[in-house]
Length: 432
Ligand code: HAM
Image (cartoon, rainbow, N blue to C red; front, side, top):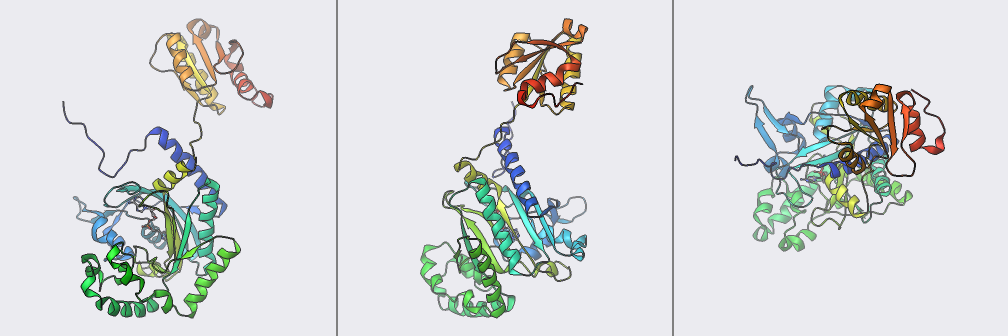
């Protein structure tokens, strides 16, 4: 026997019980996004590799070690499975001149790919719901993005999600801070670990984000970017906080929140929980005013965030979130050739009226089919034998409540089903 094949490590199948929870969650999320005026956009999963190198930054973990990049065997193009959605979204907005029409509130969802070490809450194929507001410069949109998240946590009944906030200022402010930070870190060369040494001149800000306990004290005392912010950046940051305070959203300013992607400036934020172990960031984002121009568009401000669907669902599950019950209204059982043809007609007629119908497939006795009907969770069975079919009749049998099987014509079926399922709604369904 040949060896069974397995999914790629870190890439998960989502089986029906779980997939139903995903769909329920996605429905809630779509309604929530609409209620804030965000519109869907769908981008390809594969993009030219230079897009991510330029947008995310050459000296980031994602670009240095986590991208699934390959050369197209047919034309030699350098391609990458998207590790995130912001770069693609901005690329699409530029390519289709969307910003000429003014500000755009957009969202996308789907799989992202990063070659990380898999563990609970961290996968190589994971899913994001991303939200991008392109063309808005004020602190109001930053606050809107954060308020949206707070509302979704509330709608989902999530507990223990807290907001961490920081400002990364402008490129100039970061440059001045960076110079002082490098000088400071050079003074501590002896204790730097390999990672920190490697990043000393390429991405010193990321050293502040180190998890190495031996570096914590040194990092605590390092020059802080917040102290380098100019008046405009401070006013912007204040503006965001004023709206958050008004809305009663608690937050903590975390001066060491720097994010792992290079495109950010000014406001950055993360929603974090302790309930999921090490991978506790369920949602993250911020402002990225330079990215549109960096990717070749006419300069335009922008801000956004993305949430990790696997992490959010794990948290939702902890807080009692569940799939909506997906069960058929009717299960159609039939025995005989004529009966089978009539069964298909009856089922299609019912579906035409909006009922969810499972038609028995695979034959078997009435008794074994009725067992399947019962197990399906359907409220009603439609029962058809060859004799009934010849007379144009079907049997309608309640599977859950009281009531005997009735014999009716196909024309009467939808009304009879409606009467059984929604007895309080009268004869709204009419007859076929
Ligand atoms: P990010 O922080 O790299 O930001 O990812 C956002 C979220 O995706 C994380 O907070 C986490 O919940 C989830 N996530 C990331 N990597 C994994 C993984 N390996 N397994 C499971 N979940 C993961 C971005 O991607 C930016 N594009 C966000 C953004 C949008 N900023 C502005 N607009």
